[in-house]
Amino acid sequence: MPRRNRSKRDEPRLSGAASLQRSEAGPDGEWYVRSVSGSATTKTYRCPGCDHEIRPGTPHVVAWPADDYGSVEERRHWHRACWDARLRRRPTRRSAR
Image (cartoon, rainbow, N blue to C red; front, side, top):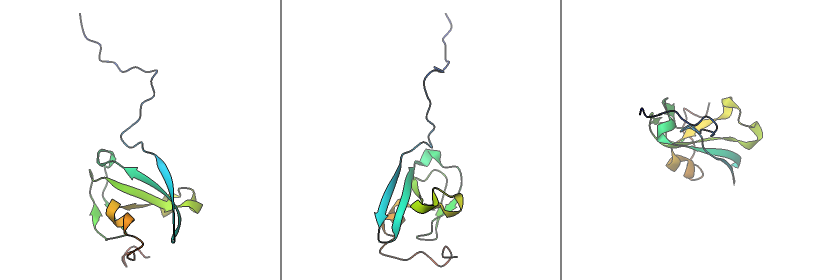
């Protein structure tokens, strides 16, 4: 008897990019933050905290001001450590355009 390798179409599927969005408040304002798994990344981004690349396959966070409602122009991809340290150091010159 042949095997059936079909997925169940009635069950909702979540991609690897699916993650929970949360809000964070700090002295620099209210932010929406989403964690991105390494398996969900396919592009190279530049972290505004350290000005280094975030290569595909690297877990990181995406953050944007809460008052912009997720505007694509305001979203920034950060290394987790850089996002956590953003209040202790300023963004690099390159990202402060």
